Amino acid sequence: MNLDNVVIILSHPEESRNIGAVCRGMANNNLHTLRIVGKREEFDDTRVRILAIHAAYIWDNAQFYDSITQASADCVCAAGTTRRRGKKRKGKLLLPEEFTDFAERCDGKVAVVFGNERTGLTDEELLECTMGVTIPSSDEFASLNLSHAVQIIAYHLFRSTQKDFKGYTPVPLERLDSTVTSIADNLQRIGFFSRTGRPDMEQFWRNILSRAALSEGEAQYIEKIFDKAAGLATKGKEE
Image (cartoon, rainbow, N blue to C red; front, side):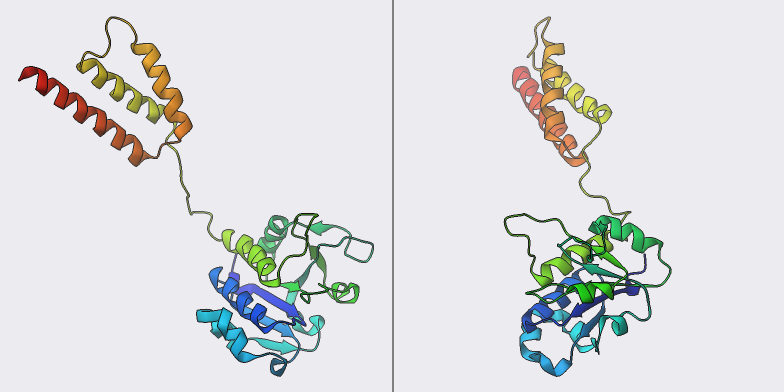
């Protein structure tokens, strides 16, 4: 997915600092195109920059329009974000991950539209959008801060371009068994087992270490610890 094709549209935001925070959230996720329904002079440039910090260039390049329709005219879809459902609220609302899957299949620019901090998108504004997206949140306090909502959607879009990125991966049991064998071999070297007891000890270490979800580096480090301990113990006996 080409993130340069993602357009973030803010419809009549009220708080200048929120715009700055939106800029920062966009920059965190490689999004750069910001469009605002409103006029630049309505906002306090200094307050925008306070929270935008190094992402102020997004504010500098922001474009301003008179309506959502105008702001999304060159896009193949305009997804309005809303927490409210209803007859006039686009019926089916996509989850962020569902919208990301849809956006990946689009050939052209896609717009994500966010409403005013107090009211969100009105029914009339949502009618200017072609689809709806919702971010599930607590019934006790369902309203998200504008910049937080942008960050959530932006992150889902960004992660769609990072599919080769691997997070923490525990070693498989086959590899873990090598560590368990190494532990047991070294314990046997120092006479820890008599004639029996090794199978139970191996099962113990296998259960414990599998729950620990070891990395490859951690597995190797444990093997070195037991190997060195056994070496020191046998050396002491020889002396």
